[in-house]
Image (cartoon, rainbow, N blue to C red; front, side):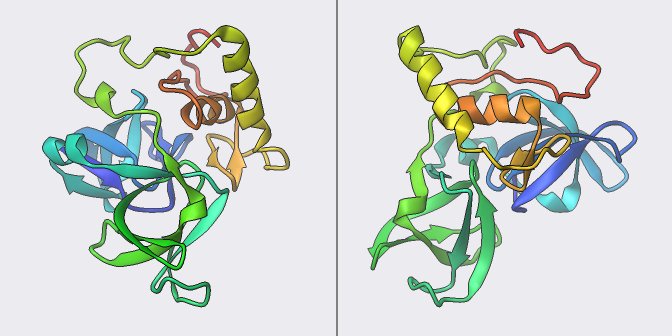
Length: 215
């Protein structure tokens, strides 16, 4: 079963269903291959595995994942509003790195978006950017597929990734975190690649016992 994360942020846990190992953001794709109690055992779109609550995953087909066209949230935090104006009711709040299904409808600087619960809302166009990573690891037969590909020259690449990492200055340390609410060491590396690069490394959490290949 394939699905999309339908909560602003949800922690992935280890086998005890309590210990945090990673964090997934709204709109990220997963592949479920098992279950335990009220949790799915999933693989993230960057190859990390663990348990997430079933309620946090909206089932979709593989074809829907392959066909979807989404935009990346680049602001630390942004509200999805019921109307295209600042005073509109807040339908959902999402974080940097989240993925939204954005339509072509633009009104007063707001793009209309389609949420996973079936509602429509509006997001400031200044919060949206092109998505640079992909979901291919979920169906690729190559275990090394999710490696950085087609990177620019090393100097400019290093500079831009470092500048992207600086966007998290002032963010608190949070074990297994990947959002502006709190981020850990591997989360910072991952998000810095994801927000800038075509591909990024699938790193285990800082406290995870798995080796951090290439870190």
